Amino acid sequence: MIKTIYILNGPNLNLLGTREPEIYGAATLTDIEDACAEKCKAAGYGLSFHQSNIEGEIVDQIQRAGKDGVAVLINAAAYTHTSVAIYDGLKTLSIPVIEVHISQPASRESFRQQSFIAPVATGSISGFGTNSYLLAIDAAIDSLK
Image (cartoon, rainbow, N blue to C red; front, side, top):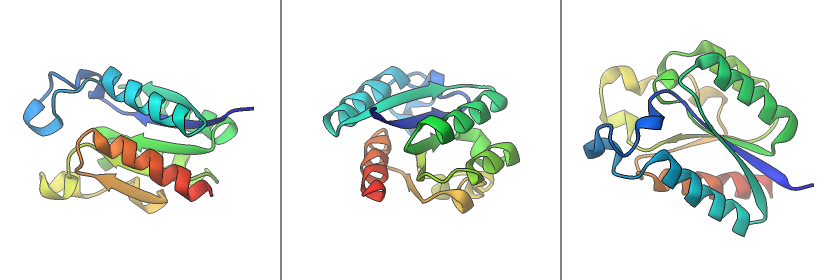
């Protein structure tokens, strides 16, 4: 059975490529998914890639990842700073959890500097643009060794 890495994306990330390109760049979420799929395949892993603007759907995917996945990479977007439900879901996992951000939250608005994800994450990668996802895949795979 192929080992699957789950990548979960929160609200408004479906607008990448057009939303604030000065912060998030020109790549679309499909571009990111394609690059992640290629990297996972090359390393011998499957990929389950999801985006939702709905908090409960993200929690459902976290629970699915806990049953079917070997690691979770999560860019919870705005829910990073507000969601106890996502925190609680991630806290139940016994697999690596990597928090991912395209921008560097610490250099942005003060409300973005509080993460509900960080306390339950194995680690966090941010500020490297869409490369943050690829670096997070490397980190997840390394933590599985």
